[in-house]
Image (cartoon, rainbow, N blue to C red; front, side, top):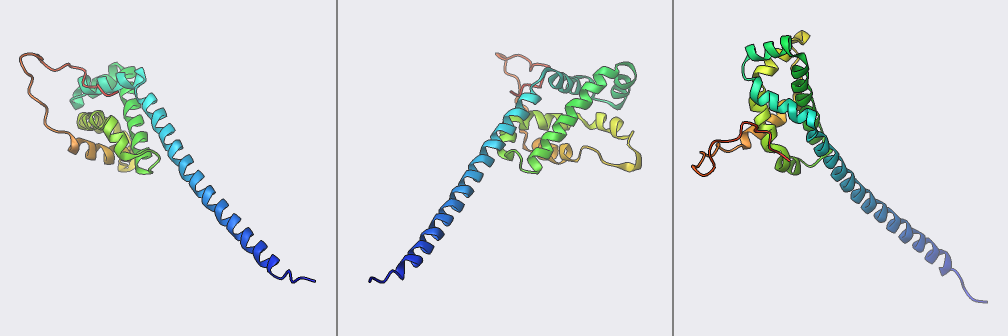
Length: 177
């Protein structure tokens, strides 16, 4: 008769090793899936930001909402255009939320959208004054647009002077992606 006392120990050790390997594989799979999910969400966000209605809203913000008076005129006389600007800023706020919560990578987002985001923030003062003046209780509104806008605007460099070959800059500064 032979001694088989080692068999339960080997079996127990093998089970432990298999469990550790499975846990490691699960962790790697989770990390890879999370990276893919963040990439997919970034792509969806990018696709949404380039849709025509949001581009038009940003263009209106850049060209027709420089003063409180012009924003009030838009609100009263052209509510559809006022709403387009509102939607564009609201979507930028959602993008800022995604960045703040790390749903999308901040560096990737700013590399692709930082210029437009910063210019939108710099152009939005009059619109925000009118739009957020409607909120009760002094709420700030669009906190993620504010936070990321300040950072994106600070990263903007000075505008280059136009060269004789290039002429004057194009009026539509919504040139991202």
